[in-house]
Image (tube, rainbow, N blue to C red; front, side, top):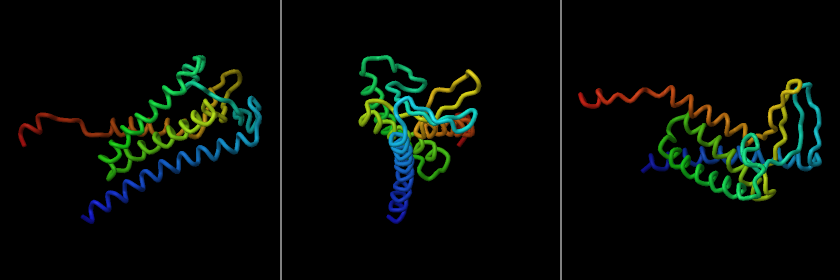
Length: 170
């Protein structure tokens, strides 16, 4: 029984980290929303600006030109992904790398869902560029999702290969 409590506390800790990611994302977005007008850009370095733009689509403004259905599609997709990742988190909660990846993705997804529900689009504000090359603006949630996906991929390449021959001899 004490082990079940430990696992529950561990799971709560992981979920708390996901909430922290979403809260930090929303705090940064509220700071930008309260400081800038839509389209305004504040240079920070020769290659980085803080801007205020809204993205009704997904990464790289994918489907942003659609009439509005994508808002609900991406919201539903995020809810499904968070549910799936929650199940994986429960299974891997004793590890470190995979749960970290899962909660970064979940926290980022929740942060962007809040935007879609409140603003009809995702608030983006980090804009990097070099000369005429410009990376699309993004936010903390997007960064968390990206780092989470990279960690998931890294974990999958680090995992030992499944060897059916070893199972037959055991």
